[in-house]
Length: 437
Image 1 (spheres, rainbow, N blue to C red):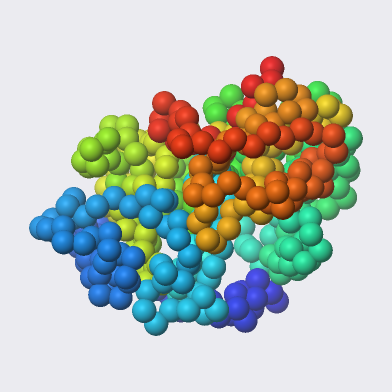
Image 2: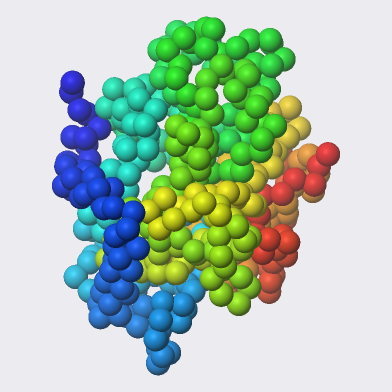
């Protein structure tokens, strides 16, 4: 087999063979010794950043740390400064993996991972998907994701799609006309699995329901569907299982961290304990026992380029009572949901589309701290944001032009700079909210 995807990782400096070997060694650690492994790795990463990272030194300051729970919880606001001021000694932007969070929680920032840490992320992904007989080098993916529409960004993603053995269905237009084309493609290509935003794939399932079509009857090679980035509601899962004719697998991840939880073949939502340490805390940052609802706080055990230590990801969840250090189970995830925008033309577009529209204001200078978009009328959107400085006329013009490109022309936008944004009951900012019924 020609392992094109593995080769692309190696070319980009990600030591995937070394990472796979290390990942397997971690998995081989016994249940009885796994708590020692976690304790050792989390202490090691704290010591590293205390010694090598100026940002983390400032966060700890003169706080007295006697036990793990004394370590302060980090938030996204800690990272809203230029990336070069956040990197550990010995790491430079050109030699680390750099990306940008989607801003789905309303707190966007640019982040970095050292290349070995990111290779471990891929080793984890390979293992989880492999449990369902999926191989990134050979299994064809039907990808329901966004894509940059500028020439350079679009070309880069299309090249990645080739190397990753995936066929992309951009999710900016989910009208029946577009979904008819999607259906036709499924009848021609031997897709092994579907992967993408939950809300977009649900809309495709509803389209199939209207047409009374079960997808694997026209695409018998289809094995499963992996949904990510947004909440998966039980009724939507049942609908997709019925209309696709394959198992629906729930994925929970964060680009700045890793794959956080992935449904295993036993239908347990298994948390990644190999490269992350997950805690559930209350409003005072006290660690809660298994079975109690609270904020999800995550420590990246291997990222030496950038600290994510006791990092509040902005989600609320519950770890199952049957969890252990080696096999934590996510019982419930609360709050990751995005509305769908219905536009004047009849076009439907998922809330995550607004990441692509607002990316021009998610700058590395950290000016824009938070933002949310509210659809107040079918053609009117209100963008509320918290920033040090007002958005410039040029930035506003960029957003309006991007909306014409990604959505449609004739939409109206208002921009309101705020001191503070309204949060949901869970304490999370919802990036997109539709008030149109």
